[in-house]
Image (tube, rainbow, N blue to C red; front, top):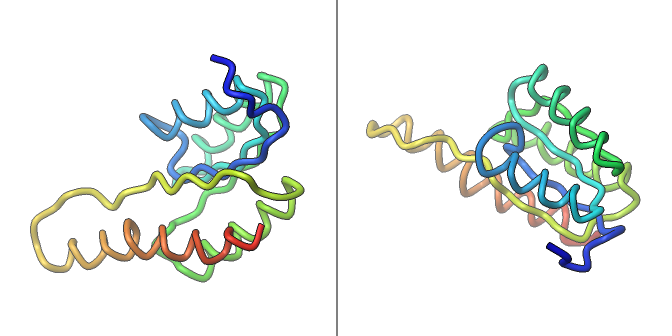
Length: 124
């Protein structure tokens, strides 16, 4: 694809597997510099190396999006490290369990992770 995104800067959360990985790879293939996060440090490191091999700047860190303060700090640091931000893709999810405590946890990751992400990245 030629989407005209060369030189843009993106943050993709939950980007070491599945849809998030496919999104990060697609962006890198288009010439987009990418910052990624996920909970598994080894998977983040492997994914960052694979994205860099596509010729773009790629950075990443193991982050739990449910930890609001650490997540916001990572978003800010990543946008600064990339030299700005054009695209924010909040891809993480807490899952789909059925008890009340799990739903609260999922709300913190799915909804509040997106809210926090928009708050921090919008100025960029």
